Image (cartoon, rainbow, N blue to C red; front, side, top):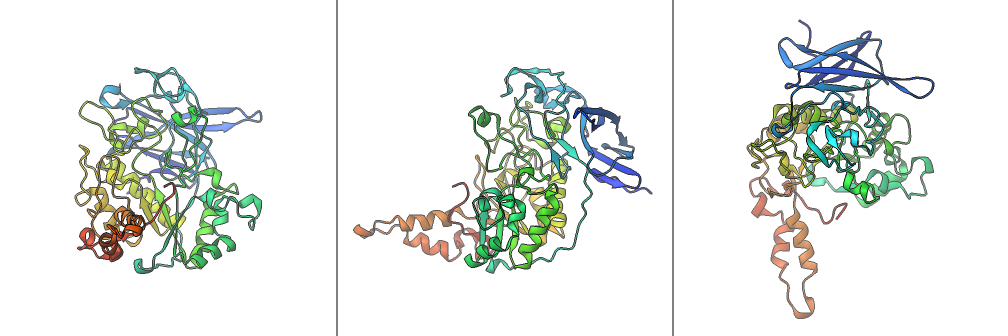
Length: 456
């Protein structure tokens, strides 16, 4: 019996197999792009077929296609925005399983599924736009990276000291590094970087988001750019501008290996709670065009729910979104080689299909810590979102950012020593001794005691 196709693009034999899950689609086309000598792109479309035993999974094997091929998807289906259905084959879609992307999101009205009049997406939300968005969003790229042996330090939680850093900002001004690699993945594995971390007593380097991201339209309108990376257009593809080479994946792997050799673990800050597609008037880049109802939380009227402050919330209660998140975690762990994850706004990931948060009942939270591989990685929750606060509510083996520790320490140092007023002493004692009021069932190392974050 033939094995079920793996999601994404995979080199197999004489070509590449492309597979995508799109249960509500009526037609899925693979769009392949080739560039001629003049620099113009030409598109070839091939329909994928749904599997007989799983019609939600569309797949096709294309002979002669190999590493470096640029591609995307075009998906047709019912157009009914009021019910959360936004299918539009005029829009090229990023493969959510692509590991590299080529290009950036353009400032153009044609990147919206509806008819937009400006780059903010204002316009007629009920009318399907027919303008082609190819070349206005990044192409997905076929790669061929596989799971590898990783020499992990496996530092116990009791010895863990985390240093949070932005890949570019961390080494951009380090004059001891060659100028070409400052602010890049390569710089993370350099001896001067490692010596700096070891001299501080750091055991784990936590990287702010390194998945491919874009700048929000409202920020662009003010002439500014998103520096921090909390606006993903992919959960798996690396952000390309942090690379000193044409191969960011190998570059990052090499730096992680160097950090591991020095006894330093690597933790990733992951933004799985929302995407750059925004709210109801947001762009169509990937998930919205594949299956908005599966990937985003909606209310009973088809309106996107926003518990993140970013326009949308990933529907972590849906098996399709869970599958993508779990597969993404395994990619970062087993191929890239990271040792743990800090989940941004984790309360959003613990919400059910109606938007109610319950970390202990969440299928996704449970699947992550029951996975035989992921359960061996460091799992850190930021236990809140813009509408919920869940500190102390996550199950073992999850650890949680403890803002009560941060506030307790700060309040102590703000005490009025001149007048003899020390309102923060009792709380300080409780926080530095393990916050038993929050973690009495899980022990003191369930608390990630942080003082400040980037940005803070």
